Length: 426
Image (cartoon, rainbow, N blue to C red):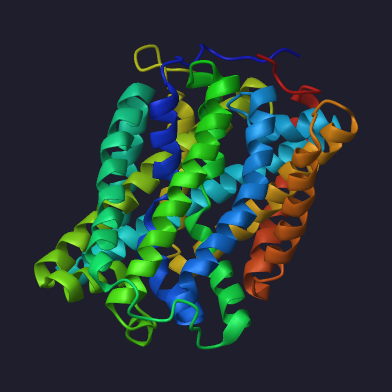
């Protein structure tokens, strides 16, 4: 069966737009919310935890970059695993987990946004979370060019927030021991497990491959550049944070960057940093909304999901039914209300996906479809890293994640008669 669809997506994104999208995906709500927990574990050496997390992310990032140069499609992980294994079941399950992880991430980040505003206004967080999801989905619906334009503006603001922290900390550089940690190497490793969420999202860049100019060149370059830029910002910000405020004073803080800004430049700057954190959160929801709808669109084109999800709106050239469906599911998941639990489910499922993508590259390398020993090494290290990260979650998160995976198996039984045997080619 051939790929189906009611229209094609518009190719309008260049390298700058793709890099802005990638940086906006990575430098999102995570760094603003997780700097405090990271410092709690690693102390002044939190910058080293960011470096280690970046190295782990780069293994899978290189695999995504290489695979996207071969298969630059909106189906992304679904196509990578399908091409490598020729297994309709494995391809479907990976796509299923990507969609669920993205929806859970949207819900968790939106609840975080609502939590910030609840503290200010007293209005329940759920109200603001739902309002944000609807607003960002509307931007997504209008069109990819408009979405990327909004993303560029929001990315500039959130990167500016990190730049402000770096500038404020410049005069304090060298005042502390940057290797001091309360619990030694174990604390740094624990911080990596927390901080890694700040890097999750780079994989969303490959999902706009069908809307990117010269995707086989643009997407890999944009992905690597996005990781490098984000890592540089994170490390510099981490050093500035512990230079301005003793790490002991940041233990347990959910707004470490705002605390540092207030300490260095007064309470007004702290409030401004909180506003930037809200903008960053909104941008993350926008990007996740785009990524979720595009993987659903890509799978529907291959008959792996209901046909209506691959329909493209005549005016905006966006997958409007995929956007609407993911929006409704994200809102429903928001009603759980437990941010940490929802976020951990998202993390668990995405690490399974990373494991599958890294393994797919190794399989294609053995089949000679992928050339280069360095990519094989990245795949092997990525598999090892993903397995290690999967051991860090508690029993409740693991149980729910596996239960959701089981639902995917049941869904496959109903959909499998209509699945294509392989990915769509460009």
